[in-house]
Length: 70
Image (cartoon, rainbow, N blue to C red; front, side):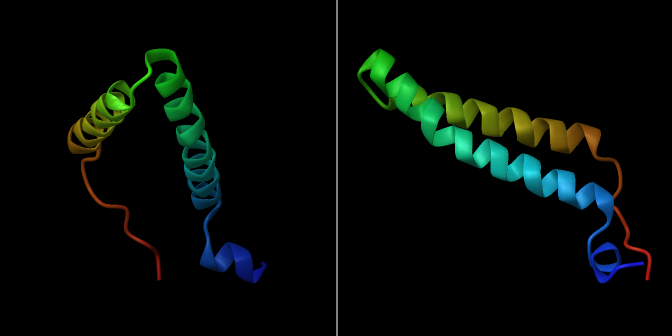
């Protein structure tokens, strides 16, 4: 077993990749919304709505914390 698997379980790699992928797309989407509307207001409002939906999903879907096996 490699040290990488001891430090990072396989599911964390997909979480890290998904986070980087979404983080790299947010400026592009913000720019597209700003170009289409001529204002950053809708971009910020949509970002707030997405963050609120993510918080609600976390609140209702996650039942118990993930415990690392020592």
